[in-house]
Image (cartoon, rainbow over all chains, first blue to last red; front, side, top):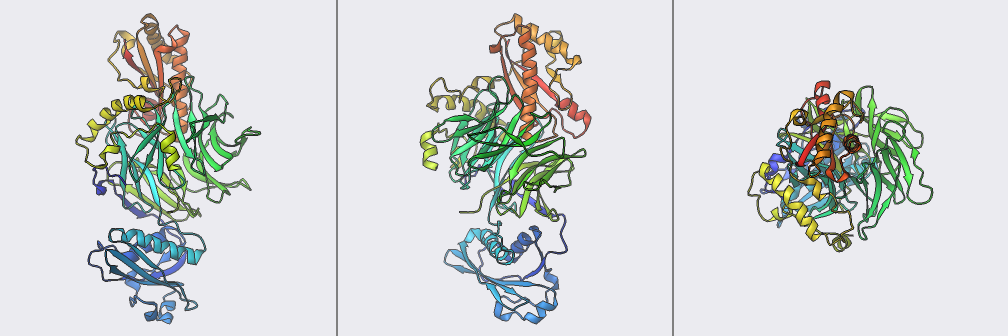
Length: 420
Length: 184
């Protein structure tokens, strides 16, 4: 990761859990034994607790209610922990192994007494948080059957200062908001970050030239590639599933926004839409299908179009006068988008088979929903007292967390792919 | 994919990429304009694209604004719009007309029309709406005899509000096209 000489603390987010659920799975994450003097004080059990609680599927036991704190499965008195109404218990140890740190843990099913998993996770000494997220992934998968997405990253835009002297940063952080690092900055707007499918690159729009341009930036080296600075709008980049193409929005000189596909290797540009309306915000369903926003019917609505063959776009949303910026769920059964709900702009989910719509957020100016790669949560941009914040919400809408910046506002979160 | 990208594309390693090994020496407020002016030239020289390619076509539109003409209505540079609309309002026609008359009679004068929206709605859709507003002003000016080459457009959507706030008073001031003179 390239650092820009900005202290990480400055870009750090603060997390608040703003609601929880009562029918979540009760689990006890006992504080781990620690024999590593140089582990930075990371509290592995607390990180795992936060991960699992934030998913909305778990409710972890308060430490003050624990009558004992075993650190090995063999020391767990099953009957005692069952009486405390937990279904599962996690115990573990953190130790040093040369320059590395080893996290060992056991996940025990208190109903059966069976040890379900005994992960041993080795990470560099400075990456204990990453190890803890991997442990969360193991626990989440063992119990829910769904792949965990705690060891993943998010990208977002932060804005500091008052116009016209604002500073825009594109930031990458762990999915829980920790370990935030700016990857680029400008005194003019940065917007629409998009992860490459392999998690190595971000595409984004920058106005640093006063007009819009689309860049690709490789996270590991910071190297940037300018891919589109055509006359007019250059916007809404979206990587194809194989990472070889970019869907984007161009307007040309006459201002008609249409969707194009750019082949990154050959630079071949293929026009997808031709309507005189605003066509923008493309997202890929598969290598041959895009969803996008268009106001060809009067107001913005979501459409689906096939690349090649019969490419007449089909309208997908009907329930509101304003529905825009679709994102597909990882299993392709739902779209998340922004919809006008009364007088509020909120995040909604539509089931593609039934057409049923659920409103997931409660703000007045919610934006930019993005699915976790396992589909269990979404992250989106909201407001708190007029300041942009990020929020995560479990897919059932019941558990939310807020991520706030201590400096200015944050917006346009995008959840990266699974770690490779 | 990575090697294809590097071979196939105009690779522009910019000043920011160079920050990997050293901290920026200038404060953020100074870093922006500097990189903003440095980018187009490096982009143009390293693009390797043939001159017909429009990849770099917008570079000229990114020039620094100047004070421009100040007589009468010409001192006013903001054209306001109604919510979710891009038609030029009756109360804005005189202003657009005054600038159009000036440009038509000063063929060397050039402007950039910067379209903006209020904060409501999605960001990229608002880029579209801001562009539509800038184009509405552009077309009105061309109807009065301004030549196409005198006008560049850009849309900032909701990204550059003129005033902060989430009420109608703030929104009304943010739904605007700014007329920025590049030469007079």
